[in-house]
Length: 325
Image (cartoon, rainbow, N blue to C red):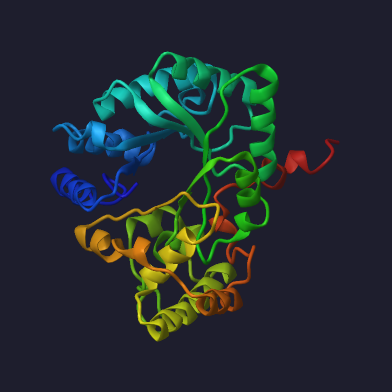
């Protein structure tokens, strides 16, 4: 997500960072059509063009609004848009297939049967190897699995939920549900969009970034939930220091140590960001450290509502909460 206009605009530098990640042993690349309106996919395509495509599991996503017109037919998970937008992603990525094609968010206006039907057809055509969901609530994960079974369609093989020390609501129902269905879990935001990078400390100037400008609900320090995040980040930084490791390694190791997690998706914008995160997979947290983390942010708790990644229309659409008069 950080390659392109949303983060690092220099394509050569982004390609260099991707190559460094691959050289370090990373073999999974996750992008999306909506990241910088296709620019991220273009950069990834450039990075994999010189004989590296077969060395990686390549994933992208569909759902978000594409183009600047607001055309309602250029978003969502209808058969029409999925089929059309996959072709656009393949062109930008310079490949004839993707290993994992993901539904970026639940589309409340499209039934699972239509979405899964389109994805199943594309899988049978060889254009995608597998497909998954992202940031689905537990009940929709179950409904999608039920629909696939009852209609004889392919099923979501993976889910990509938000998960970090500061964002733990998925521990209550999403992660156990994914374990029961044997789905791969590719968690996003293990550093809580930078809050667990070590840069957010009390008494210090808050980091400025394009991400903060784009997502003020996650970064506006005047919001109560974000103030709680700052308090927790301070305590976690102290804990990491006592444990003799960086807060970044503590945070990534915490996510990776959950039994449901297959992989934690990192989002480095620069080479320094990448270097600071490599090695976390080799860190094991002791039960004592994990208990201390639970004291700072209890299991199942997400400190800021805006970090949940998905907000049900029953909460955001007034007409779904009130009788029409």
